[in-house]
Image 1 (cartoon, rainbow, N blue to C red):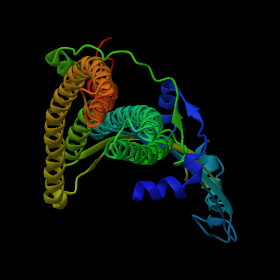
Image 2: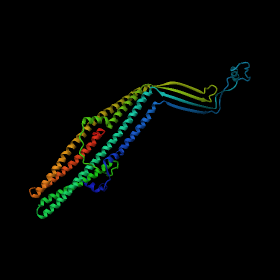
Image 3: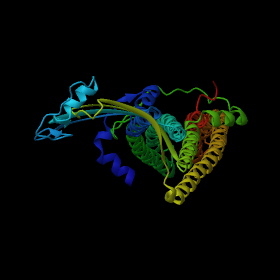
Image 4: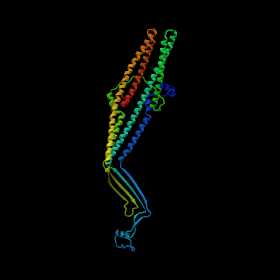
Length: 445
């Protein structure tokens, strides 16, 4: 009843939806919100790496000051009402002697200073290198995650496209059955009017027609839902889209499982992303561990000053080293190292589980393709046999040696065989797409 309600209450789904090929569906899937979110995460990780690597460079700081006082500061070394007689004292001592009674500028009214400091972390470089490595691994992990998101979106688009094509094929088979049963009802009514067919046989044909129409109504509802799902998978927000260009090519051969599993463990972007995350966590733990050692930095300082008076030197410079070690925080740092290593181990165990899941995924996809291929082959033979059996039962019924029920049973067997063959073909298509996703590339390439 739900499908019938959807069929009659969703006129937009019943309208002629725009068509899309499989290749276009895959292309549109790369523009879905999930892929866009992964791209943003990749950009954020790249920016994080760009922020991390400059930590290896020396730090240069420049500072300057301008001070204005209300008056200059003076100093007089000797005060006397009588000038000092420095006659006969040779220079420069004579000049110095004469200045004893004069005021000496210790600080001018306006003083300026400019200082440049260059600092290079020495022991800190080891931690910085680990931090940069962690940021780079994180950037690589984000890139692989974006590729995984694209692969997932492509698989969903393929699966939705094949599902919609399958419902269309099933609907076509059911519609053909309705047309066939409508013709049978017309023939049966003519025969009944002529007295060559019983009332019971006429009712059997009418019941078969009603059942065929009910199947069409249900399949039409499934088709509309499949169109909406295809729209979501291709980024339309749920607006219905119908598949175009489905082929009847037979299923592809089943490749070797062992070789595919090996390829999957090398190529699957989820595996690559998790390996990079493990490497980033290991590097981050190493950086945290190095934070426990004393921090030694080399530095060079140059300062230029003006207005400092007779006793100030305008240019000074020195080089040295600094040691910084917070001994009391050692326990906290050790706990941080333990936590960082535990997080790295957690990711490593997650990687082990992910690899096991990939092995299982490849095996399941291969098995699905094997079953679908075998079913398709058997169903194709069954369609040939059911077609021949229907022709035989129709001749027997016309000659009076067979019954209408046998004809209807043979017709139903043919429809089921056609439906099974169509389902097996599209199941194989989905299994092929799933196997490509599981391997991380073309299994037949």
